[in-house]
Image (cartoon, rainbow, N blue to C red; front, side):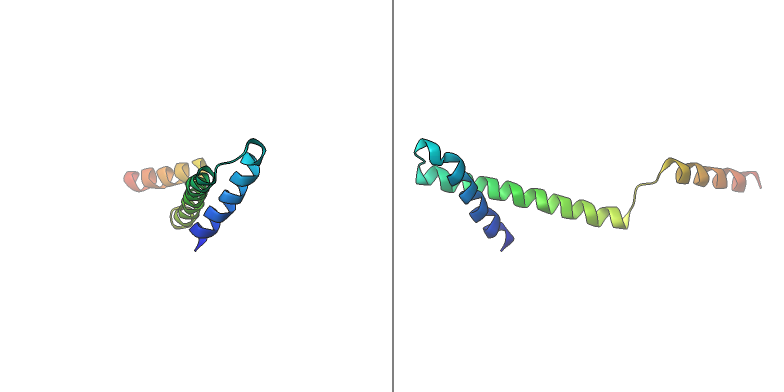
Length: 77
């Protein structure tokens, strides 16, 4: 459903951009399909990145140093 909306909006954008030079209908439709798929792909990549970052957040330097310190303490004892 969202892909179809992206394609339609991209087709409208292509029509507006090509209106000045006598646009060809097939070119506008092809432009809409390609750009709509690209927009949808970028949206899905963004969604995947958000979901993965909540599952496995990046460790910052302080957390990493603290873990190393704890491991060294355990190794000494």
